[in-house]
Length: 260
Length: 264
Ligand SMILES: Nc1ncnc2c1ncn2[C@@H]1O[C@H](COP(=O)(O)OP(=O)(O)OP(=O)(O)O)[C@@H](O)[C@H]1O
Ligand SMILES: [Mg+2]
Image (cartoon, rainbow over all chains, first blue to last red):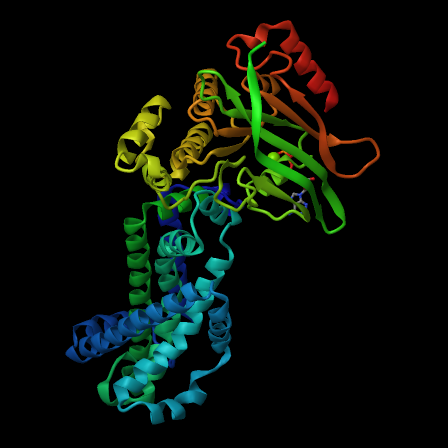
């Protein structure tokens, strides 16, 4: 029992599950007792959640959003990889670093420019998303590259590799598993942006538009239920990406086991 | 005395200095390794580099192998060319292996760099793995290896790569008695596999290392002066202590080891 408060303490799976269940129950109880007229009670949210999952409106919108996010992530990771790999070449280094700094640009101020540059709503959404995500991906990947141990390069050199072979072995092959980790860590950001971007061009629908509609009619129960869905989908992706990474790159799992 | 002559220069370190900020690590290092020619044997060279912990052996290795630039001075090879990274095989003290490759693949990468092994990479790797008790480990990732297994994999990797020069930083630590014999035998075998093969061994295990060497270099600081330099060079051929099987029991050998220890 004492172990659950001990730094680096190791607890059994069973204890972990009991602990989580208890924490969830306490949260629900607190929620139940503190919520009044305006904030919906857990029971109501659960009902709304159940209903939401069965409506066609929700399912269609969900697919629109998911498809857009995945597409944006795919484009973003490709762009990121190109720039990150090139970043070890001095000529491209500054470009990569500039992209990293673009994190500080807020999308809101750029909507007008992007509207001018794109021809329709879906293109606008996609390009805004990609523009928003790439800096975060690039930041993560560059930090992976910067943190590469000197020994990895030294081993390449002693094996007689030239610089291109070293780039291939250490960064492209050696850090391929990190691509999944970056997707996983930044999925939340893409997910956050999608609700915002979708509000800009409502014609195609999506979770974002749905949220805005519910908000407009003060349908807070449904808003919270929708939040719950967003949360669960996020968790699901987190888990899926982690699993894929370990499956494709067994060594990444070993590293984690050593670390934990 | 064993008859042999020392011929052309294979490696020449000239006036090597290394400092970090203001701290002098290595000072005026000069030595050369010559090709030893013996009748009827393809005799390579084995040099022991001995010195206290923290004196600068690993740093000197990095300079010799071209991985690091000295503050001043040059390392030249037999064709009078300055050494560059990749000319030498280096086995580092911590036996780093690519974490994302299985042992087999790591070895294969090295074997592919060696033209001599073209077409028989697989068999050669399996042969080495069998000799060094690594057969079951070939499929594993470095994280799953014991310290000693990692070390053997690391040594085999550089052997497969097949450079003429092989620098070994602490190859004997962490080996059990049986493996120690195998590794020393292997190094002897490598050193006689080609006329030009040259091994430079850094080790705190003076007896094991000196027993298979023909030359001993002692790296140490000279009284008062900052930085380490080659304090002494011992020619074991001259003392008739090289290339002998049961050398460890000989009186002259034991005396030489004592002499080295006193020098540290
Ligand atoms: N990057 C660095 N910056 C400053 N000083 C360094 C650096 N790397 C090594 N040194 C110093 O250089 C000296 C020599 O280090 P080196 O690793 O060569 O020792 P060593 O002889 O190999 O010791 P050991 O037998 O313990 O491996 C040490 O005093 C160390 O503190
Ligand atoms: Mg060292």
